[in-house]
Image 1 (cartoon, one colour):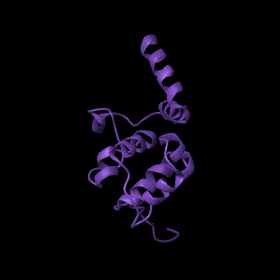
Image 2 (cartoon, rainbow, N blue to C red):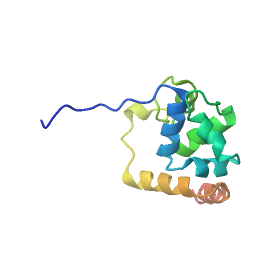
Image 3 (cartoon, rainbow, N blue to C red):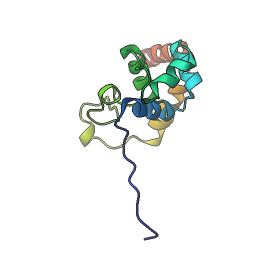
Image 4 (cartoon, helix red, strand yellow):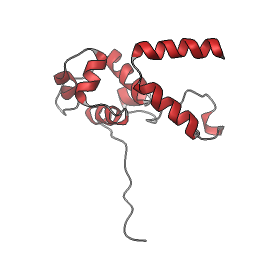
Length: 124
């Protein structure tokens, strides 16, 4: 071994979880603020140890946008990774096509996401 292995731990404090989720979504503070319809200073406040806390609606948006579990983002309990499949423990890992599809979907505007989802539901 070349040296000690450092384990990356998931953040435990709300401001750190918010920053983690925002970065996971690939968003700047300003970009997240625009998506939600608030000022960038509000997002900056959420990430400060003594700052304000986001509303439940804003946490839900960030959880969906970043793919983290809402409960973990809001409370720190459970695992950070959201998994919509009830039998995820027994399912194979996501394949690269699913990962590409999800990453692309997350980059779309809300209006385009809705249109694409309607099309996929009709197509399937």
